[in-house]
Length: 433
Image 1 (cartoon, rainbow, N blue to C red):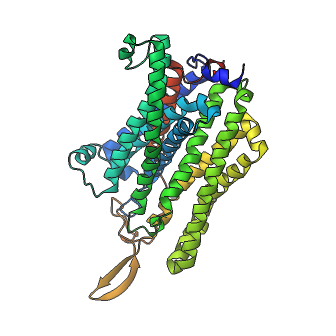
Image 2: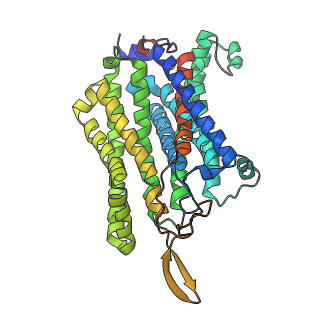
Image 3: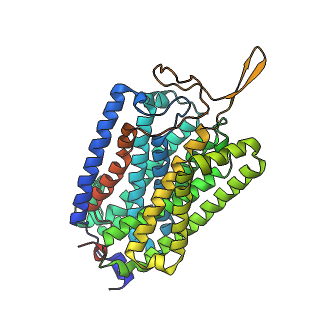
């Protein structure tokens, strides 16, 4: 059967045992993370290793990671409709679904970081429009609606054919041809809206960092485009991984051209990512002075291992995916994508360490400058022998933070596997036995 015929054949839901295993794993992750969240709600944010000096940690890094993947997923789906990428059309539903699931996961991660969930209602009832956090809340809520509509519109013909579905009772009075035409027309319209929204969601997320005047490491105009480049790379890689697993080993070769295209998109986005990183480092090195020396000490010495992971793993994936060997096999694509995910997550985490450990505060007593000290660290309790002031906070996520940060992983795995089990996301020729 030709590739074009496969793309238009009757879809059926994936029913493999692998999906059931993923659902079980997702349930375990959700149970662990929700239990940790309950413990944090009872005891407060003191159970984390964050402080008033190092106020954003693993939670915000995880949030930024999933926002990026969400943006990348819809960029892939929208690009297929807008630029007629025929070989990627069988994967548009997966791309939209991954974007929707990752947006849910990213949004959920904000709540534990706030400490008190009831504060969300204050943001809704009394929004401070000058706050980038309010912008982000609006954009994420809007993006969640757009990604849901993208999945919904694409699934309408399949639901009509099978006589089941979700919120599709109005289609009973329509013929299949009418529903199919409606689906095509509105899927394209949502794609037109979705592409700028995908760019906007990560631009606003980057501005959350870049507009913090006291964090010199974030104060760069290259941060938003770099966020978008990393989002395209990681989001496309997730779409590729889900599609590869759904297709299965036997049918991988039938769609190898599509996977080659996705791998090339990942590699191309990483070229832009590394260009922007290089430009930023050059500027810091050229004009930074003492501040630049401190930054490079933090990046290459104190956190050299983590920064090496951030740079080397995505760099390997970029080079690997540009080679024919990197695109030739299922395992090669999965391996390269895994390294990329680890590297991009390290990139999100490394946003925190340089910024929160470069916070000079000039203190004056009776007009005398007594030096540059950091803000006093809130330890939560008096500890004899520990100074109230510190110039460095060696943040390490606690067990509670690690457990709670599994929440978006559980949400994404559950939503994607559950929907793939119930509803058709791939042409029948693509489904795994």
